[in-house]
Image (cartoon, rainbow, N blue to C red; front, top):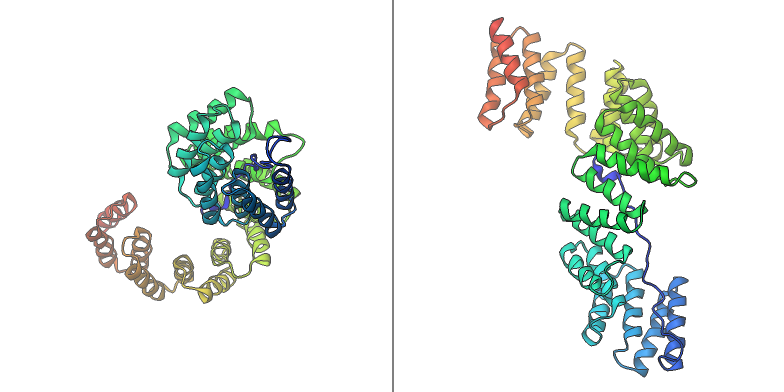
Length: 383
């Protein structure tokens, strides 16, 4: 399972209620602006837009109305429409912080991180200690994989506000993204220690995932168990538990959790294949075959196909296993694992020379594997 299972920790909206101060603008505009933002809070977006558009009939290009319309569209995830309103506001009111903030968030939502960074940094020229904006800039640098700049900004936030949740979470993600799992574990654990009363389940699963990556599976189980106490059907916690037990070679326990996921999502091809692997590793080839075939019925899956080949091999049907593995090699000639299993089938069939030729054949694809080299050496010594 990929790292996509680890969701981003959303930073709450911080630039809302952009309404005029009493006496600074005409009363009618002030009232309509307040009304519009109240509608946004109540998720009555069309009514909010109507209120802001009324302002534009009173004063063309009014900054409160343009920002309000941008916020209304952003609330509905209509980021392109929102971008147009914020940009129009900035044409007439170049230093409007609310328009800058909204525009940057739109660029971020559309994965245009370089543009978002440019806008946020423009905002910071007016307010260089705004923690909400700084964490967003750090997030954006993380997205474009600028480790140094991202870490520098997160740490500057921690200098301003020790143990800031979003900076700690962001630093955890940053180090995790760069496969620095011990450092990710440090920041996420610090976040957990800071929030003893209310623990976000995503912090627990993230810490568990670090332990999975570090192969400290027993410790991972502890955090995934805590996550399941909070949310018994959480996919990421169930997956983590199953994978930790797989890593601990407790296949029977992993089967329990793979099946819990399948109760909720019976057509999950990846989980069907994982469960098939677990049954195969316990020697239950009948159940393993059922799970692999269910996966293959959904769509061809190379791991399920390999699992079926390995079942044939495990049951002594070496010719059938070899045939299946040859088919897999045609589909993916650079996967050295297939050559090793195929060569092993030939060894079992007393065709040692064919096994050696098979292993040497992978070199034509530029694949270099110590495992293949070792197997060739062993076979040639015993030839």
